[in-house]
Length: 149
Image 1 (cartoon, one colour):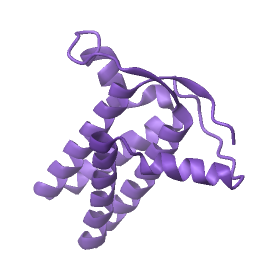
Image 2 (image 1 turned 90 degrees about the vertical axis):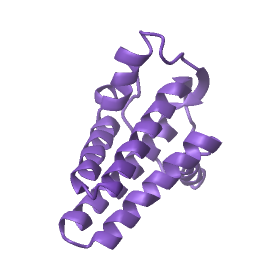
Image 3 (image 1 turned 180 degrees about the vertical axis):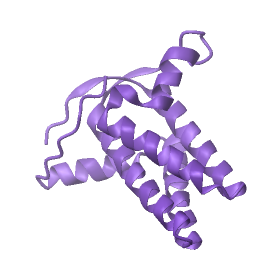
Image 4 (image 1 turned 120 degrees about the horizontal axis):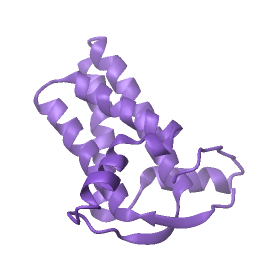
């Protein structure tokens, strides 16, 4: 699948990752599975309807207009990042189910996978979900994603 290059604000992505990490880590420390479920829902909604992404909208309507975070616009494809967010949402949905079913070790392990992968992207700039997206595309797997605006 050919990626459609577009302009993306990398700081919007970074803010999203930082909030995901913070919420999930806080959920772990306080042993609050509802925080994992909350992040799962936010990520799933943001994947299905990119304009409704809560963390992205906080960045766009609060942080950026006040100048608290400056935009860092780069040419990139939104599809790969949207796919990565969707994969993270699936992991967190599974994590939430496991946590609420009492399978806490599995539930927290799945949440920590998302924390670690979001941190790798935030701190090192390598998006594992994006890598997966491009590898699937190289093998002819077509993934229909909504538009990220």
